[in-house]
Length: 78
Image 1: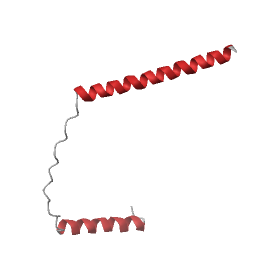
Image 2: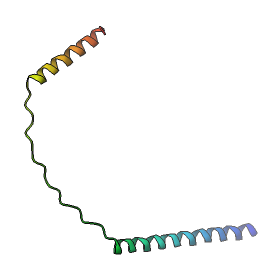
Image 3: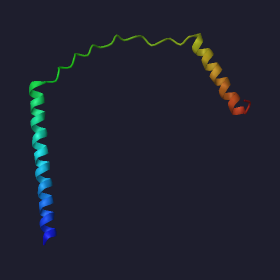
Image 4: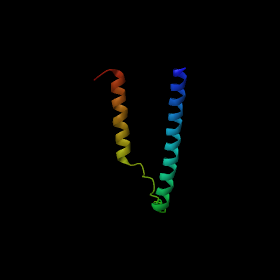
């Protein structure tokens, strides 16, 4: 019978502690929002649209170098 009493006392004390924790957390949250309100976010300014870069000679040369490297790798010549 003592085991049941101890179990009921333990469960009751945990329930009281958790309820108290919820109440204190809620009160703290209300106080913080009342005295320290969140700052309003700044408006987002749209970025200026830049035109897409035009493919030039550098891109063609880079493509050729990459293609040659892939070909050499697949051929097994390191």
